Every structure is written in C-alpha cells, then in structure tokens.
Image (cartoon, rainbow over all chains, first blue to last red; front, side, top):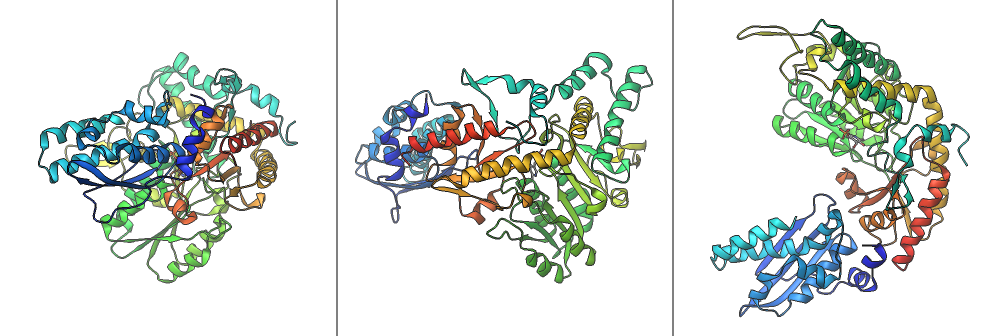
Length: 146
Length: 414
Ligand SMILES: Cc1ncc(COP(=O)(O)O)c(C=O)c1O
C-alpha cells in the first residue's frame, strides 16, 4: 500500500497523541518486547478484574505504525471480556488500523503490540490462572505473528 | 551534472543494476552504500569467468585448472597488499568479512594476550562487530572493556584514551577508521602514536575507510587491520585481516582443518606457513578472484578521485539538508573530517517511516540503529536515517532525495 494510505490523519494522530500512554503501578500483566530488526520497543501493562480488562496502558519507542497500533489496541481492549482479548487475531489488528497489504518488514511494526499482548496473556494464564491449555495456544499464536 | 573529479556517466554504465527501475517506473537511487555497494560488470564477469572456464580447488591439485585458479586467487592477495600498502603479502589473510577478521583477532590473539583485570579499549562509535567480540573476550578473561567517548561534533575524545593508557593495564585499543553512522574520520595516526608509547596493540576497523580513502598501512603503523570486499565494489563473503607477521606467527590458528597444516599426525600437527595457517578449508575462491577486479576498478579511478568526488557530493547534500526545517544532522560539519555518510532525523518522522516513504520514490537509504546501539544511546536517539554515497552517485540523485524528503514532510504535515 502507498504511504499516503498508510500515514493517514488517524495514524499520525495516534502516533503524536497516543491514548493510554503510561504505566500502571503493580499491574496484573506487564510485558515488554522489541523488534530486533529495527529496535522498536513496547511495554504493555494490564489490570484484569472480574474477567474484564479493567485498565491497560503502554509505553514505547518506535515508528508511527508500531506506536499507533499499540495505542489503538489499548482502546480496542479496554473494558472488554478477557475471552474476547484472548481471541484477538492478526486480522482484527490490521482491520482496526485500516492497514492491509503492508510489506513483510513493516507488518511486524503493526503486529508488535499484539505480540506483546499475547505474550503477556500467556504469562498471566500460566502464573495466575494455572490454565496451561489455553496458555499454550496463545503462546503458539504469539510466536506465529513474526 | 557531475562532480568535476570523475566521469560518472562512464562509471554508471559499468553498473547494470543502476539501470533497473523500482516500484514499477522509478529509477533506482541507491544511497545505502555504507551497508554494501553495487558491483560493476567487471567484478561480475570475473566471478562468472572463473566458474565458466577454470573452476577448481586451489593449492593442492597439479592440473591446469587448479594452477590457473591458484594463480588468480593468490594474485588478489598481491593486489590487496599493494592497495593498502602492506609490507608483506603473507600478512594478508582472507576471511569472510570485517566481522570475522575482528573475531579472529579477539579469539586467536586475545585469548593468549589478555588476562584478568587487563583493559580493552574501544569507542562509542563502533559497529557491533567491534564491540561484541571484545565483550565476549572480557567476560571470559575477567578483563575490562572501556570506551573512548564521542563529543558533540561526532569526534572521539582522545583524553579518554590517555586516561586508560595511563593505568598501564591496556592490552589493545580497537577503533573504526571511519564511523559507519557519523562518517567521522578518526585521527588514527595520533591514536596509534599514543598507544605505541605504552606498547599497546592497535586494531583498526577499515570497513568504511578502505572503500573511500587512500589507506596506507605503513603510515598508519597499527598492528591489526580489518575490512570487507563487499563495501568496495567487491562480492560478499570476502574480507581481509591484515596483521603484523610477528603477531600472526605467534597466534594460534582460529580454525583447524585442511590447508592450514604442514604435517598432521595422530596427536600432533604442525602449522602451515603464513597466511595459510589462518585459511583452513576451501576458501571463497570465486569471490576472492572477483575482489581483484574491484580493486583494479578503484585503482583505475584512483582513490584520491574517489575521495574528492564524495567530498563534493557530501558538501552538496549537507548544504541542502541543513536548510531543511526540522532536520537534525549528526557528525562533523566539515567535509574534510568526514566521509560520504550522512545520518539525520527529520522532525518527528521515525526513520523507518521515512525510509518507507522515500522508497516509493525509488530511493534506498538505511534506517535504524546501523548496528551501533552504543552510539545511538550516546546520541540519545533510538534510530537515525542514513544516506551514504559512492562513486556512481550524482548531484541529481541528491536532488531527487531532497525532493522526496520534502514529500515525507508534507505527508507528516511538518
Ligand atoms: C564500521 C564497520 N565495521 C564492521 C562492519 C561489519 O562488516 P561485515 O558485515 O562485512 O563483516 C561494518 C559494516 O556493516 C561497518 O560499517
């Protein structure tokens, strides 16, 4: 896709004015990852209450695509059922961003946030809920992202 | 339009790839030469001629093909020695690249000579390949790794070197002759001079300097020198380690195997002469032969002309870039102190986004940390964009580049 289609007003807005930017003190889930190819960094914090996402925040450094993607993902999952978050797919993220047909290098930027989220869920399911069956499934999904 | 120093049109005709279009109909503007350069037809022909007419293994067989291949392979060694003004051909070791050359020294020399509490000195503007091998060595030996800092002009702070040398514990100082991010040309002779006073060994990473400057090893007077063929018109997979004969003689082999031995018995082996002691196994014969054609090509133009052309192009680009609002340029302003490598950031456009946008206009630049994360920390940025020139680049291409940067600014509403 052309850069005029990628760098639309909304992407630039989320890049420059990221929603839910910051950290949660003592979060239920804290997960960090980076893209070794370009050094983009992302950390997500979540609080889970009554099987819902009670709060979510992120911090990070990187390109407009990775940062906008992270910010829009936090909005997408805020207040949602835990089950919904577990089921989120790559397509959901790209739909949400309105970015399709990104090249192989840049799609990683768009999906870093989902990778961080899934890895965070994995640790949470294993450590806190002892639910290794669904944890393993999520781990597989996360490593399949890139 | 061309710089006054070389005939660019003739040169461009020797590079078939420069005729291709990218993104359907955009002429390729290749400004990623610090990563790897394009190859002239002479290099491509030399490689295919070897495979087409005299492909064979070298050094051992007595048939005619092997003789021809051995002669061509060894002729490259002579050319390399002459190109960098090394005293002895036996001091030229063929390796895979700069990275392997530095690892060879850290392993084969470092393990014999660096001990607990010794100091290894590198700099803040090194490529990861001149940091990580020394970290490994320092960890293994309990030695310390120290850094010469970089000032705000992008130059090394040599007072730091003096401070480390004064401890009497430094075993080796290792630095790049030209930074792959800032373009800074290191005051190498001065560093070597200071190290010699303390009997400290010096390794110079010439990956960015040999392709762009006249390098004279006898004048430099260092102990080890490393560079890569692929950054100077040659093929990938070939690099050079040069080291003083006395040092190579006392070093243990890096790899064991065929070709590096004199006699092998069940439990004892004696080593082959230099440089073969360090060239175990069948080497990259075709690409070493191709490298000779690259050296011939640069020799024909003349390294002084290469340098003058790049200085003129760099000055032209820096003048234009520095007029852009919101640009931050890294490295020395004075083109006599730097090579044709320009790192920058434009407003709040992340380098990856910038590279994506201008790629659409056919322009290939690099974005990211350039394998220099220690320097990125020093500059307090996570990434930069980097344009780097070579002999075939023109002022028109710089204009296309500037125009495309302006388009990126518009897209980002800057
Ligand atoms: C200054 C410097 N040193 C070392 C290297 C590593 O060279 P190579 O990848 O050919 O081993 C590079 C290039 O990437 C470089 O620019």
